[in-house]
Image (cartoon, rainbow, N blue to C red):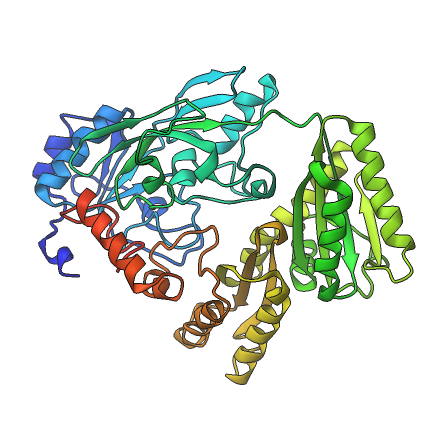
Length: 483
């Protein structure tokens, strides 16, 4: 807050300077003409709202450099913004900061089909990159429900996880290099395409997950793996959550190298997805008695081999003396394969259609997934907050392979009473398990006050020192990650 007192707002004279860097079409400001900046000031959930007067849309790294140099000199705070698909308010202003939209930086710089290394501007949409490498039989190592609008720079800045992390690992491993503009306008060119580079400090890692608080990512070099020659999936209905972990052990053992996803969906999440048109994986009869569901995906080199392994798995599970599952359906066509994934990926959209979601993206031991959901529901009930006019649903889904639970509380409206009941309760639960308050969504504006539940005082002090080294004037995405 002390730093904010020396920050300055954008003025007409600043716009005149920006006009010497950018064409008129790349400057949106309410200071000189009516502009509807709602889509830039608000997050997609309608939970976080800023009051920025100005959006700049550079097309090159040099333009970003000139803009940041001026803003640093003038002490104008800057919020870098990609597709604005985040869930923690990290890409929208908290006040009247200048918004730096990367959407015009959408060039694919190079792709090497031999090594699989892709170099792209930060504003490239994830789906566009997926489409670009597909004809060369490669896939992006990251896959998200928001792939049609999220941008690779934002993915890297938030260290997004997603549905392929079990198979391909995190962006800390697949990102080979970055081009970053520092707060003073200096261009840090670490856009390496090398798989191996053991030459001192790996500076790029500081910017992966920093959420734009240390600089603006303008270019990304990323390793894309070969595309699987065959993909299959199966959805399994389970009578109890206690069967999930034994099932995971069996699936890992029997599918081994071809296992690429193991996704958990509780009954409430499944029912909401079906209710809001995200697909129907099983008939009403097939889901009778099911408390939760698991979606298993395989990705391998030969369709017949993979299908046989999956079919054998399903047969063994259903014929066991004490079956872990009540039912299972394996996709029989590309359309059915997509529809099973649509059900899982559609949970987020279904939750938003049902009400106002409080979203908690946490890492806790796998054994506690259901307890965390059930205990949260009981806690809200003890506060008298369950009901159609308050909290309508408490549900959980997530990536079992990564220990990542998405705990969602669906309310009729965002209220201070619900917020106070949820926090710090949920963060205290996470801390009791030595978990993480943010498995993949980041800290943003939502969790700055809660960082201490996952990070020690020593860690936070070091993070603040790093911030001061890169951004001594505190202009980069203020109010995010660190208080």
